[in-house]
Amino acid sequence: RDARDSRWASWGAAAKAAPVGAQGAAAPAAPAAAATWAAVAAPPPSAAAVEAAESRRWAEAFEVNPKGQVEVKLSGTGLDDAALCLWCEWARPELVKRGAVREFSDRSGWGLARRALILNFSENSIGDEGVKALVTMLTEQVQGVCIRMLFLHKNKLGPASAETLATLIEKLGSSSNRGKNDYRFGAPEELHLSDNRLGKDGIVRILEAAANCGEGSRWPAYPIRIGAKVRPFWLRCENNDRGPGHYQDFINEILPRLEEIRKRNRWRSSVPLVCPEARSNGCTTARCVKQQDQDAPFVHLMCRNMRHPLSAGSGSAAAASTTCPIGGGSRGRSWGACGRSAGSAGGASACWAWSNWRDPQPWTSTGESAGERATASSSWHPNDQKDAEATWDS
Image (cartoon, rainbow, N blue to C red; front, side, top):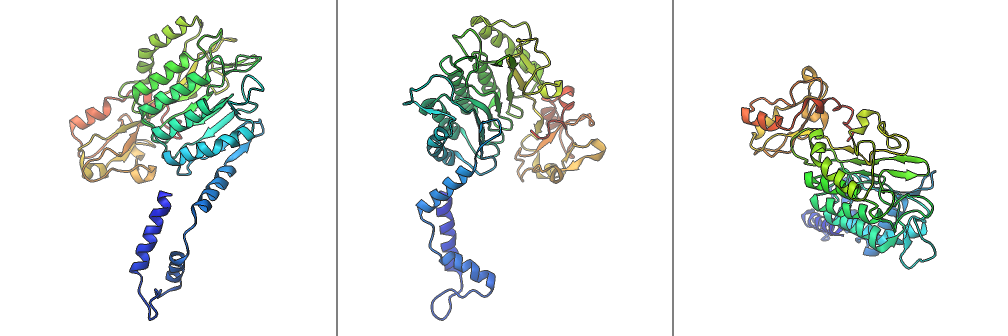
């Protein structure tokens, strides 16, 4: 609605600036101008019409796939916090109608809903408030939720969103939210959070919630058990301001805390709790190479820092001459070729250089100082370059 009001204001400004004819009406000089004036003169759509159009668009985003799962495909649709709050209000009865959730007033059965959910809100402008509204709807306004996949990568999630998502995992992974005849919980099986701003503490909070998920039950919620099949929780957190250092150092730092949580719940495992960088190890979302029979790591964790910010104060001249090392040092592309901004005048740290295993240097820039190179290289590790091209899609 704010966007609509802004368009009306711009139309009104265009009408005032248009030339005035003999009879007091605008006199466009060309067919294109006439079409523009017709749009300005047309009455604005009513609020009810706008809401109806949004409802139609949202309804078209719902789909039941061949596996019987309810998919919501709203990736790259410009959703922000306000729009996601409105969607949550609109979607609750729709999810009930499609069998993906049950109202709390429905006491006809116990356990999970008939259909699992796949929610794709990636590549939007969703922030902490939007995630809070989504989690509130899934945990407090409906019951029987079973999330198969939740895509929130390439949004504007901060540390507050990490706490909210940890709450989602804990509540949907509670002993009261699981299947009747198996140990399948409703907590997400896949959670995609790459390219946000969760921070190191945010990633740790989500991992702690996943390690403790299913507290009070004989079996933990993770690894996921469906019949005789077992698979770890698939968690992608690349490029989330984790800070400097290799990802294996980060895992070694948090591992004692995760082991303490599992031991407190009397959940024993003969395999490592965390399988790092599963995509490069040959693991898939359905199986881990480290699992043994019914024992598997509880999480597949991907948390590489695949980008290095140019330090603030490098100046527009240096930023403009920076080359991206993708494709090798001798074949480095310009920033425009790889779609990355070269930053603005004044030295804003808006451009990112990607490591590449063919180039021994993380990034190069003409005119850089020794301090700038030290800052950018502090978070670089030779092993980070091994998979740079393979993880470009993240």
